[in-house]
Each structure stands twice: as C-alpha cells, then as structure tokens.
Length: 310
Image (cartoon, rainbow, N blue to C red; front, side):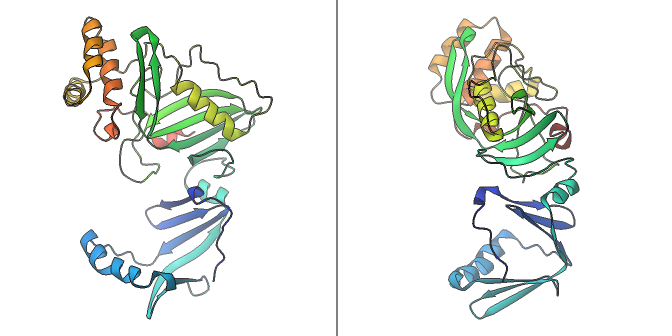
C-alpha cells in the first residue's frame, strides 16, 4: 500500500490531464500515469451503474498501486478491478512543471497562499507567481463616478511579480470565464472594470501603493496584499473596456434583467453623455449578482495562457 500525504492540505493537490497521460500532484509528490487504453462512458451510465457500486461499501475501498506490474487495483467489497497502464512513474514537481512548459518553476506549494497555484517562474531578479482565485465577493470603488459597491469578482488568474525582497512590482489579471478544467489551453478574458489593459491584462496601479510597513513579507502575504490593494483601491475612471456592438447588446440585456438596479439607473441618467462611464456602471451592476461571469460578454485577451504565466 502506498503512503498518503496527510500534511499538505488537500487544496494543494491538483490533477493535470494531457493528451496521453494524467499527472497527479499532492504536496511534494507527483505521479504520471500513461494509460494503455482510455474508455469513456456517458454520465447517465456512470450515475446508474458505477456510482451505486462505489457507494455500496465505500468504507472497504482499497487502492493498491503496483509499479512493477504497471497496474492499479481497486478492491471494493468482493469486487476487484485492475487497471493496466503503460507506465507509472514518480517525477519531481520541477520535472512535472517542465513537461507543462512552465520554465524555471521551483515549487507548486507556497505557504500563506489560500489559492491554487498555476505557475511559479523565477529568474535571477524576479519571481512571477500565477494563482487561480475563485469567484468571491469584494468591494469595487470609483469615487469619480460615485461607485462603491459590493461585487462578485469573477474567477481570476492573477500573476504577481516580486523582486528578491518579496516586494510586489507588477500585477496582471485575467478572467477565467469558462467551465473547462484549468490548463494551458484555457481561454483568458479581460478584467471587466477599470485600470487593466485590454491586450494582456497588465494592471495600471496608478497611485496604489503596494509597499507594506512590515519589514519582511512572506511570498504568500505579498500576493494577498497586492490583490487586495488593487481590487479594493479607489480606481481611476480610465482603461474602461470598449465592447463590441454584440457584447454591448448582451450587456444591456443582462442589465435589464437585474432585480435591484434603481440606483444604477440614476447613475446612467447622470452620465448619459459619457458612454464609457455608462459601460462601467452596467458592468459593476451586473457583477453585483453571483455567477454573472458565466454569461457576461468578456473580451478575450490577446495572449495565451502559456504566455500569460511567463
């Protein structure tokens, strides 16, 4: 029986699926599994036939890993299922990331970061860490337009660049609006509010200070401070996304269906001569509802996921 890592939190375990294999990372251990044959089944069959079998006596489920014979054995009650694979191979985290084309990465688990880590890319002067942040509630402020609203921030890829003193120097944001598993094929979209460039998601920090009074920040603390300072700062009303005619139409439709928009209607009336301001007001209003990111017409960034993390 293979020992289980009970120290690393479960949130730091990730499954990477690729064309010919699967890579399971948990703590400092990574296993690459190359399958001899992959069979797919439809969801209804899985729910009606396989799940009941698993639930029948889940407490007696035993998984035996046999690298010598190249197989996994699942024992459930009196049923034994053996999965034959081409290869079972332990690899280092660095090697796994190298195979995912993320260069010079040193680790995928960093203390004080409550987010899933996508990449950790380093050179002599800088360290660029990309994390995935799930949808969450925060505050968006733009005092010039009298906006101070609690909004649901969409799922984000956030890349924070740190110098060797762990002080943040740059921030780059992208929205992950799709429901597909995170991978280097994920399509990234633009930040829907202000102060981020349309092309690549680089953030204009303006007067937002990322410095902290604490003498020494951990890497995790630096990342959390950077994100909070940017998202909750008083934004300048510039770098507002310019949406296509079709996206504008979809946004108007989403806004029309909002339940509580009376105060936003007043703002739109006050800023009726400023198209950009009206666009921002509608975007903020729409994001006051949970799950809005699933249908919001975000604009695609001009960079791939693989380029974004570098």
